Image (tube, rainbow, N blue to C red):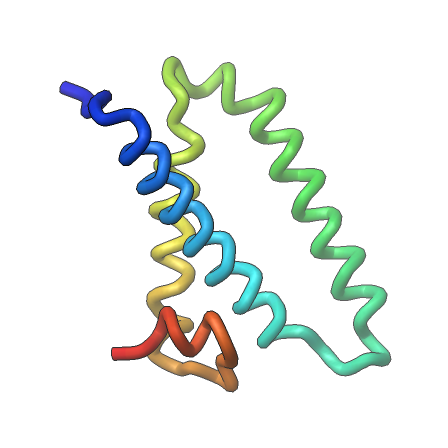
Length: 102
């Protein structure tokens, strides 16, 4: 059974969940950013990860999944990554501090 009504509220809920997951992941990347002397390598490996993720979604995911499973899996993985980071608050600022408030 899938919830399909009201479509507007469901869209807002999914957009909000995706936004929060994306902000948590981007916040963790910003906190873990290295010193300026190593930023080029950091962003190179970050872009390699993006390429590998894009290849997975474009080529492998259609072969591995019968349904659209990437979105729920991405939300679960983002929460799994955010949980250990939430306990440390290694200098979280702004949105990261807001989302990590107890």
